[in-house]
Length: 67
Image: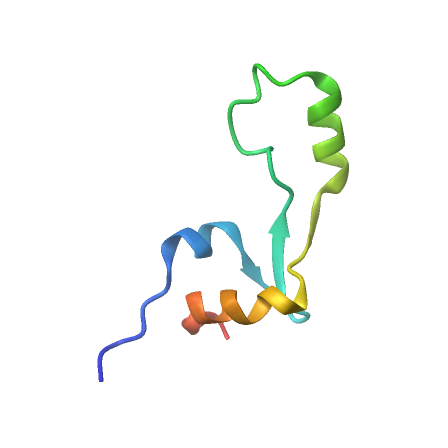
């Protein structure tokens, strides 16, 4: 049986914690120069949060070595 490989895109976006997978809010990674301050401020207030439990199984499959 071949090795299980981690999906690299998922490993850059999610971190495994004791309670699930941590994720960051959208629209805060790049191209911030043309976005207005209000849009960036509201995105920043979201900060990080956990992935919803209905989606956690999907990420668990993408990252099999992070269990």
